[in-house]
Image (tube, rainbow, N blue to C red):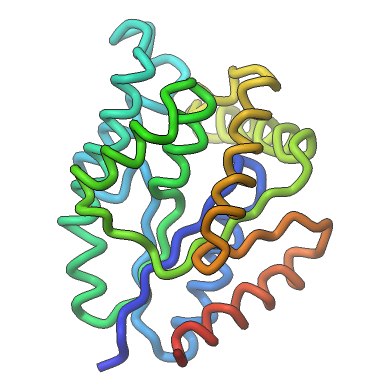
Length: 221
Protein backbone atom coordinates (compact mmCIF):
# COMPACT_ATOMS: atom_id res chain seq x y z
CA UNK A 1 0.00 0.00 0.00
CA UNK A 2 1.28 3.48 -0.88
CA UNK A 3 1.98 5.70 2.07
CA UNK A 4 -0.45 8.47 2.80
CA UNK A 5 0.49 12.13 2.63
CA UNK A 6 -1.30 15.20 3.97
CA UNK A 7 -0.90 18.31 1.81
CA UNK A 8 -2.59 21.65 2.48
CA UNK A 9 -3.07 24.60 0.15
CA UNK A 10 -3.04 28.08 1.63
CA UNK A 11 -3.30 31.69 0.53
CA UNK A 12 -5.72 34.53 0.07
CA UNK A 13 -8.90 33.93 -1.87
CA UNK A 14 -7.99 34.72 -5.45
CA UNK A 15 -4.46 33.36 -5.08
CA UNK A 16 -5.10 30.35 -7.33
CA UNK A 17 -4.76 27.72 -4.59
CA UNK A 18 -7.97 25.88 -5.45
CA UNK A 19 -7.01 25.72 -9.12
CA UNK A 20 -3.61 24.27 -8.24
CA UNK A 21 -5.14 21.74 -5.84
CA UNK A 22 -7.44 20.45 -8.57
CA UNK A 23 -4.60 20.26 -11.10
CA UNK A 24 -2.44 18.27 -8.69
CA UNK A 25 -5.30 15.92 -7.81
CA UNK A 26 -5.94 15.17 -11.48
CA UNK A 27 -2.28 14.34 -12.17
CA UNK A 28 -1.87 12.12 -9.10
CA UNK A 29 -5.10 10.25 -9.86
CA UNK A 30 -3.94 9.70 -13.45
CA UNK A 31 -0.78 8.15 -12.01
CA UNK A 32 -2.90 5.67 -10.08
CA UNK A 33 -2.75 7.20 -6.63
CA UNK A 34 -5.79 7.45 -4.40
CA UNK A 35 -6.47 11.12 -3.78
CA UNK A 36 -8.93 12.67 -1.33
CA UNK A 37 -9.74 16.36 -1.67
CA UNK A 38 -11.64 18.58 0.71
CA UNK A 39 -11.95 22.18 1.77
CA UNK A 40 -12.14 23.94 5.10
CA UNK A 41 -14.55 24.99 6.27
CA UNK A 42 -16.59 22.20 4.71
CA UNK A 43 -15.90 18.70 3.50
CA UNK A 44 -18.30 17.00 5.94
CA UNK A 45 -22.04 17.44 6.55
CA UNK A 46 -21.29 19.38 9.74
CA UNK A 47 -18.55 21.33 8.01
CA UNK A 48 -20.85 22.38 5.19
CA UNK A 49 -23.29 23.85 7.70
CA UNK A 50 -20.48 25.70 9.46
CA UNK A 51 -19.26 26.98 6.09
CA UNK A 52 -22.67 28.44 5.31
CA UNK A 53 -22.68 30.35 8.60
CA UNK A 54 -19.11 31.60 8.33
CA UNK A 55 -18.86 32.51 4.65
CA UNK A 56 -22.34 33.48 3.47
CA UNK A 57 -22.51 37.27 3.41
CA UNK A 58 -26.16 37.11 4.51
CA UNK A 59 -25.68 34.79 7.49
CA UNK A 60 -25.19 37.56 10.04
CA UNK A 61 -28.65 38.87 9.21
CA UNK A 62 -29.94 35.60 10.68
CA UNK A 63 -27.47 34.80 13.48
CA UNK A 64 -26.21 38.26 14.40
CA UNK A 65 -22.69 39.63 14.11
CA UNK A 66 -20.26 36.74 14.57
CA UNK A 67 -17.69 37.49 17.26
CA UNK A 68 -14.07 36.81 16.25
CA UNK A 69 -13.77 34.25 19.05
CA UNK A 70 -16.90 32.45 17.84
CA UNK A 71 -15.57 32.50 14.28
CA UNK A 72 -12.32 30.89 15.43
CA UNK A 73 -14.14 28.26 17.51
CA UNK A 74 -16.37 27.32 14.57
CA UNK A 75 -13.34 26.99 12.29
CA UNK A 76 -11.80 24.52 14.70
CA UNK A 77 -15.06 22.61 15.16
CA UNK A 78 -15.07 22.11 11.39
CA UNK A 79 -11.38 21.16 11.43
CA UNK A 80 -11.79 18.59 14.19
CA UNK A 81 -14.70 16.96 12.37
CA UNK A 82 -12.88 16.76 9.04
CA UNK A 83 -9.81 15.25 10.72
CA UNK A 84 -11.87 12.55 12.43
CA UNK A 85 -14.27 11.85 9.56
CA UNK A 86 -12.11 12.31 6.45
CA UNK A 87 -8.43 13.16 6.80
CA UNK A 88 -7.09 10.63 9.30
CA UNK A 89 -9.03 7.64 7.88
CA UNK A 90 -7.86 8.49 4.36
CA UNK A 91 -4.23 8.80 5.45
CA UNK A 92 -4.46 5.45 7.24
CA UNK A 93 -5.56 3.90 3.95
CA UNK A 94 -2.59 5.34 2.06
CA UNK A 95 -4.36 8.20 0.30
CA UNK A 96 -2.87 11.55 -0.61
CA UNK A 97 -5.10 14.09 1.13
CA UNK A 98 -5.25 17.54 -0.46
CA UNK A 99 -6.95 20.08 1.78
CA UNK A 100 -7.96 23.58 0.70
CA UNK A 101 -7.08 25.52 3.91
CA UNK A 102 -6.12 24.26 7.35
CA UNK A 103 -4.83 25.79 10.60
CA UNK A 104 -2.53 28.25 8.82
CA UNK A 105 -5.69 29.96 7.55
CA UNK A 106 -6.91 30.48 11.10
CA UNK A 107 -3.53 31.83 12.16
CA UNK A 108 -3.63 34.30 9.26
CA UNK A 109 -7.32 35.25 9.20
CA UNK A 110 -8.43 34.97 12.81
CA UNK A 111 -5.06 35.29 14.54
CA UNK A 112 -3.73 38.23 12.53
CA UNK A 113 -6.72 39.53 10.58
CA UNK A 114 -9.12 39.51 13.55
CA UNK A 115 -6.36 40.26 16.07
CA UNK A 116 -6.81 37.15 18.22
CA UNK A 117 -3.11 36.28 18.15
CA UNK A 118 -1.02 33.35 17.03
CA UNK A 119 -0.69 31.81 20.49
CA UNK A 120 -4.44 31.37 20.88
CA UNK A 121 -4.77 29.74 17.45
CA UNK A 122 -1.87 27.34 17.97
CA UNK A 123 -3.12 26.40 21.44
CA UNK A 124 -6.49 25.49 19.94
CA UNK A 125 -4.75 23.49 17.22
CA UNK A 126 -2.94 21.41 19.83
CA UNK A 127 -6.04 20.91 21.96
CA UNK A 128 -8.62 20.29 19.24
CA UNK A 129 -6.56 18.78 16.39
CA UNK A 130 -4.01 16.91 18.52
CA UNK A 131 -1.36 19.00 16.74
CA UNK A 132 -1.85 17.07 13.48
CA UNK A 133 0.25 18.91 10.89
CA UNK A 134 0.42 18.53 7.12
CA UNK A 135 3.60 17.10 5.70
CA UNK A 136 3.61 19.82 3.06
CA UNK A 137 1.87 23.18 2.74
CA UNK A 138 1.66 24.90 -0.63
CA UNK A 139 1.33 28.63 0.00
CA UNK A 140 0.30 30.77 -2.97
CA UNK A 141 0.89 34.41 -2.18
CA UNK A 142 0.68 36.68 -5.25
CA UNK A 143 0.57 40.47 -4.83
CA UNK A 144 -2.22 41.44 -2.46
CA UNK A 145 -4.09 43.78 -4.79
CA UNK A 146 -4.21 41.23 -7.59
CA UNK A 147 -5.54 38.46 -5.35
CA UNK A 148 -8.26 40.69 -3.90
CA UNK A 149 -9.48 41.81 -7.32
CA UNK A 150 -9.59 38.23 -8.54
CA UNK A 151 -11.46 37.02 -5.43
CA UNK A 152 -14.09 39.73 -5.69
CA UNK A 153 -14.64 39.13 -9.40
CA UNK A 154 -15.03 35.41 -8.77
CA UNK A 155 -17.52 35.96 -5.97
CA UNK A 156 -19.56 38.30 -8.18
CA UNK A 157 -19.67 35.61 -10.89
CA UNK A 158 -20.81 32.97 -8.40
CA UNK A 159 -23.58 35.21 -7.09
CA UNK A 160 -24.85 35.83 -10.63
CA UNK A 161 -24.60 32.21 -11.76
CA UNK A 162 -25.79 30.30 -8.69
CA UNK A 163 -27.05 32.82 -6.17
CA UNK A 164 -24.43 31.62 -3.69
CA UNK A 165 -22.68 34.52 -1.98
CA UNK A 166 -19.66 33.39 0.05
CA UNK A 167 -18.32 36.92 0.22
CA UNK A 168 -18.45 37.60 3.95
CA UNK A 169 -14.66 37.87 4.20
CA UNK A 170 -14.38 39.80 0.93
CA UNK A 171 -16.17 42.69 2.67
CA UNK A 172 -13.11 43.26 4.84
CA UNK A 173 -10.86 46.18 4.00
CA UNK A 174 -7.37 46.17 2.59
CA UNK A 175 -5.75 46.58 6.02
CA UNK A 176 -7.35 43.33 7.20
CA UNK A 177 -5.93 41.50 4.20
CA UNK A 178 -2.54 43.13 4.61
CA UNK A 179 -2.34 41.62 8.10
CA UNK A 180 -3.39 38.23 6.69
CA UNK A 181 -0.79 38.47 3.91
CA UNK A 182 1.99 39.41 6.33
CA UNK A 183 1.10 36.55 8.68
CA UNK A 184 1.29 34.04 5.84
CA UNK A 185 4.78 35.36 5.10
CA UNK A 186 5.68 34.94 8.77
CA UNK A 187 4.44 31.33 8.77
CA UNK A 188 6.58 30.56 5.71
CA UNK A 189 9.66 32.02 7.42
CA UNK A 190 8.94 30.10 10.62
CA UNK A 191 8.40 26.71 8.96
CA UNK A 192 10.47 26.60 5.77
CA UNK A 193 10.61 22.78 5.66
CA UNK A 194 6.83 22.41 5.67
CA UNK A 195 5.77 25.51 3.75
CA UNK A 196 6.69 26.00 0.09
CA UNK A 197 5.72 29.52 -0.95
CA UNK A 198 4.98 30.73 -4.47
CA UNK A 199 4.96 34.51 -4.64
CA UNK A 200 6.35 35.13 -8.10
CA UNK A 201 4.35 36.10 -11.18
CA UNK A 202 4.49 32.74 -12.95
CA UNK A 203 1.97 30.94 -15.14
CA UNK A 204 -0.55 28.48 -13.74
CA UNK A 205 1.26 25.72 -15.63
CA UNK A 206 4.70 26.64 -14.32
CA UNK A 207 3.55 26.83 -10.71
CA UNK A 208 1.62 23.58 -11.11
CA UNK A 209 4.67 21.79 -12.45
CA UNK A 210 6.80 22.98 -9.53
CA UNK A 211 4.15 21.87 -7.02
CA UNK A 212 4.03 18.44 -8.68
CA UNK A 213 7.81 18.13 -8.46
CA UNK A 214 7.81 18.99 -4.76
CA UNK A 215 5.01 16.51 -4.00
CA UNK A 216 6.68 13.71 -5.96
CA UNK A 217 9.93 14.35 -4.11
CA UNK A 218 8.19 14.17 -0.73
CA UNK A 219 6.34 11.00 -1.70
CA UNK A 220 9.61 9.34 -2.68
CA UNK A 221 11.19 10.39 0.59
